Image (tube, rainbow, N blue to C red):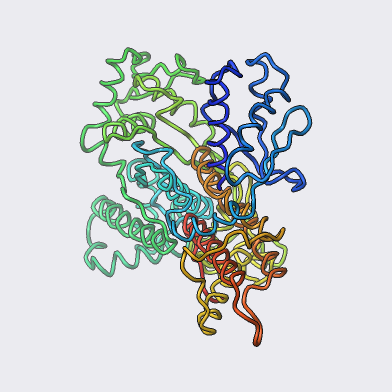
Length: 553
């Protein structure tokens, strides 16, 4: 029995008490069931009686007794105790608890998945770094977190489109092109230009592919370096993302908004909503009507559109493509964008509390030998995605960047993440999977099979270590659902570490395979079912993080 199934059982007990006239309350839509920290308090606990007592006009313990009476009649419930002011402590019998192992093995990759967001179309935009250089370490964090969040949301039934917004219009692209042109002509890079070995590499590649480019006029050169530099830089970003295990469904060009007239059309649509006005020769959007700190310029007095106008057009484009919820994942220096983006949504007539979500991620630091690493050999003044992968590998980078809440700074210690010790969290979890895979191989070599599902005896899984492991396995569906609802994939990583810890304790205290001439028993097979169930859940969880589940380490 999973916590979700027990929650439904408690809910049914409330409904039965209401129908019998014993309680006069509204049946709650959900009932919280939790694993108590003190195992003397049973396998699960719920405070539903305390929540209903006021509406029922009864003491909480009396409400608890009414519910306990019904729950004690259910198969699989070993005991129900009423504790404190009215908590219900539930203890399952060993067979009911152990049955979860069979459920998980038979469900396989589907275990933990849910339909919370079935039918919901979500656009998830992340990284979206300017195509003027390699992805830096802040973008690497969003790559790991964003891709993991997409996987978590899909596992909860959502129709997710992952998207990279290419900022290929505006001043930064002009600076990038000028930097390439200067490098190709062996001239100093402009004061506000881009530096780093990658600039020289791209410039040399463009010259090699277009031998006559340096014979063009300066303006013609600049246009070519802009177009070719963009093409090569986007191709490199796409390569690095794919090698990092991150796939984007859509690569959206900002320039396409301008070329198609979408920016002007967006201004007209916002004008129709009644929030556009003109002042001092410029066209403004009255975002202060929706809690922004100041109104925003859409079209400057010289006729040029602003980045804000592009942002408005981009949001409307997302909505026109049928995306109901649009998630923007932005860096720590973009706090000021939250209010203005939500104001765009409101001005467009949408609901800023539903149609848009803005997630802000904090900074990343890397340590080597106890000292912070700040520089890249290739990019000069930033650490790039390729640097991170070279230093710690894709698995360690993705796991470590995802396991910390996005509103907290991440510190990656290269020495820890390249060690095969329990201090390395990704190694600790992957080792648990490898350990279980080794058990399966050894069993096969000994000719031992876990047996058919019909012969599985779950009641034999009765030790405290087996109980603890089964309890952890039962938490996975709830953890996954919560990670999706709160947009917090780090919950999956932290759960996996708790599960790995429970498995290692089980493995160290409960012998799975017989030694020497010892007989293969029903307990042997039951523990093989439990090990396989645990391996399934760890593989499922690592898959949600885009991290491999190795069979050997």
